[in-house]
Amino acid sequence: MSNHEIKAKLLEAAKNHVPFDGWGEATFRAAIDEAGIELGVARAVCPRGAVDLALAYHEAGDQAMLAVIGAADLTEMKFRDRITFAVRARLDAVEDKELVRRGMALFSLPVYAADGAHLIWKTCDRIWVALGDSSNDINWYTKRMTLSGVYSATVLYWLGDDSPGHQATNEFLDRRIEDVMQIEKFKAQMRENKLLSGLMAGPLAFVGRIKAPQGGQQAGMPGRWTRP
Image (cartoon, rainbow, N blue to C red; front, side, top):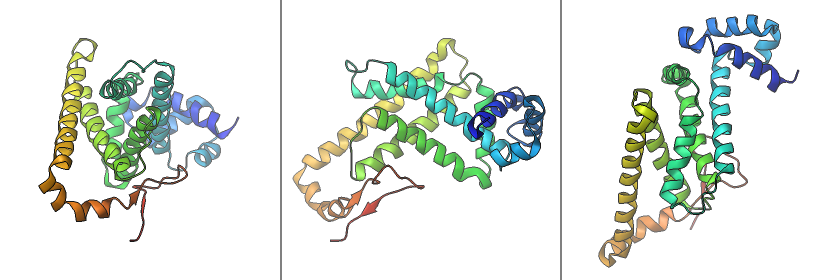
């Protein structure tokens, strides 16, 4: 078996234990036993144990979301509706809320907080890329930061939502997207205001030098800016 196949087998075995033991050592050991993988091999594939399986679980959800987006005809949708569709597709990729709830508990720990932030950023970046984002300046960052906030808040709300078909979550997401649209309208109005645009000329010239990552390579909060 390849490393990918071994990790997938461990992840599948771990899912039954996560709701009870979380993404911890007990779950990892149980997954090893059930999957019939030698301990040394499992440690080589997942050096951080169940943490690596939690990362793999999130990755699988992202890939399922991308498959849904790729198969959908979004041409008749407004762009805000495309974003809403993508976020809902990501939530629908989860088969058990408890796996996500336990994951949030894990990634809220200081030692794993950076991993959790990276997962959210990566998911939102993938959404924008899948929807055809071509921004190459400061907007590359603001789009992903804004969506990260919307996505994180929606996941938290969704975890506690027991309404039929998660209708309450859908309405919550619609409100968050509307809030973002209002901010964009304000920014457009500010740019059209000659007085405000003049006052902001200096700061805007600076942020105009900030560029999106090149070559698809990311590390944390990537980017570059050119000297005057």
